[in-house]
Image (cartoon, helix red, strand yellow):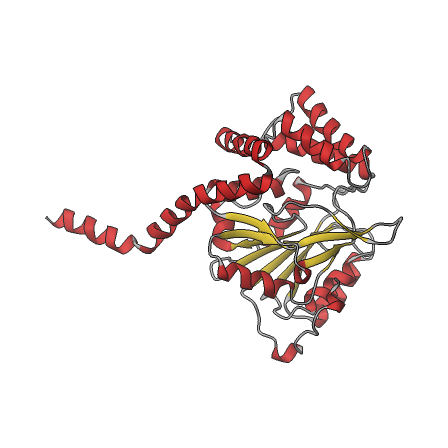
Length: 342
């Protein structure tokens, strides 16, 4: 399950370097980050570059980062000033872009947004690259997060759908990342990106295979202010993204079956309804919101797996047209030149 249970990594002096970069926003992660740092260093295919953005940490994060950066040349640190508080959503993505703006993506195949509270299998990125290369239509992907239930001390799945890549470890094909316009600076950025992928003909997915399962040391939906705040924030993010009330209600009812039972789903639903009653702003792309709601209604009517499969099949034509246009620009130019000459 953990990286120590996977095959032993190749010795560092014989490792090949993957054509991907990692950007990790972090703030006050001293309690978790060593496990993530060690897990990435142990990867069978390490990144070309790992940019870690210290978003104004006030604990021992800066010292730990300096220690690792001194030992590993591919780790670079970007330091931001302390804003005085943790800020999920917009704050995290602002920190991500602070790292992204320091690099040129022109020669990079893949871009990764990675949190520093994860324990990854040692062949995690190698396996994602292999699957991406086998299927050029995949725009973003990930493995599946598990967490240790403090009551039973057993590993529990966070129950993320196969149609999404998870927010704590986003693996993007660089071309797809650029076409979807990067990451939206709002709480529901990690849902908007996957749906925008499908709008443009790409696929988004995650796999629950042993070689891609990882441990989330701080489970999804929690918050520095408590799990109730985290779940309410998720519901408000769903409202911002454009999710319909019926779909949100069904989703919240399902989440009531997962820890914390009943109350977790209720907090999500109330977060959505509160945002709706307050008439908060929504994602400013009407075409996207219509696309999302059509898909969500199909999920309710047919089930998420079948609805996603049918949508991906329909959108495959969009992807094929883009690939065809990309491989035939010279012919179009020659034809246009011929007309001009004639």
